[in-house]
Amino acid sequence: MWSEWVDADSITILNSPPEVTSITMLPEGNLTANQDLSVIWEQSDLDGDSESGSEIYWMVNGEREPDFDGLMIIPSESVYRDQHWSVQVIPRDGEDLGSSMTTPSRVIMNGAPETPTIILGSGTTGYLGAPDSFPELGVANSLDDLVVLASSIDPDEEPLFFDVIWYRNGYQVPELDGESLVPSERLEPGQFWEVKIIARDPWGLASQSSAIVEVSNLPPIPSWSTIPEISISGSMIMFDGSSSLDPDGTINNWLWQINGQSFSGSSAEILLGEGTHIVRLTVTDNFGSSITVQDLYSLGPVSMISNLNSEISGTDIELSWSGNAEEYRIYRSSYSTETLDEMQLVGVTNENNWNEIAPIASNLYYAVTIVVGDNEILWLDNGTNIVSVDASSVTNYVDDSPSGSLTILSIPLTIIFLLLAVSSLVISLRVKKRRSEL
Image (cartoon, rainbow, N blue to C red; front, side, top):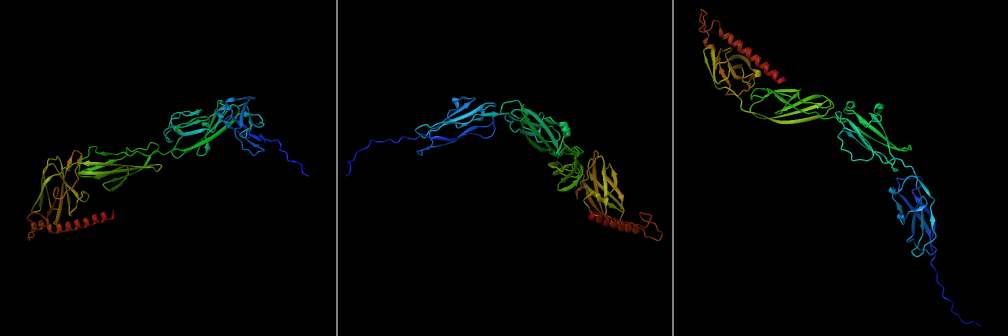
């Protein structure tokens, strides 16, 4: 037989509080004042509830710091050397608090200075110390002092001491130890200078860093002038580049481009007429750096004679022209040319006419130039200051009578003129050959 059913009293299943199983203050190892502190922990819950609302308390030197309650991370700005820190966690599962667990107390050790920040360049004054508003340094060069600006911070706010070691091309320069500046007298383009900065606190902890820089080669500065300073159109003009300079060395090469013609050397001489001319000068220093400057050079009209005429009477050739120069120079050639280099100076006069006995019985070419001050106007313009003369008729004035007397001259001019003509032709061919070989 079965007994009757009886209802039992109701039973309430209560929440099981969580329990901390492990807790760690980070970072591990020695703690210093330049490190953030943090806490991590693990907890278990019989009900499988997740962590929610756990309470965190930080202790400094055994005393709770309410300002830090609930913080997972303590910033390094609140951490100081010789403090003793610990952290307590009371776990919560969203409903109930469990039993707490506290980390062992850990001391904040002396911290090494931060790695020095270094700026290296040309300047007037170096600096070693706490971070500051540094001036902007120039590019390292051999005309200005090389300075170092270095700074570091001690996490314990202790005063710092700085050691400075300089190296030139990889070798230490002991006499500069401790200096924040390298005098410009020690610098040369192409050198490599390295500085090592060691920041030390009073307790001997240190950090270091280094920086390296190459001493730059400053580019040359092209400059030119003309001789004469006030140039005359149609005369020889010398472009002088000797005023060019190199601030940290010497100039080894000058290259000119004037109206497309190339010249080398510190100066270039060229004949220029009226118009605007392109002058380009490239200078190169002893370290291979080159700089080019280009200018426009303008000249006015060329001063020349006008109304150049020629007459031949017998064997006498006479030239006349218009002009008001104090001196005229007459050039002659046996062939047509547009440069005085291929003509012979045969006369100088202050009159507006000139004559000579024809040297050969052939076509002759004459040029008449003027002199202005100390400068001869060498510009030639066919039809203006160049004229051709047909002197082949001078052979008609040779007297071939039996007496041997000559109508004008006293010797057989025919033979002499022929010989002169042949000689002139040979000379002309040789000149042209030399020109083609240049």
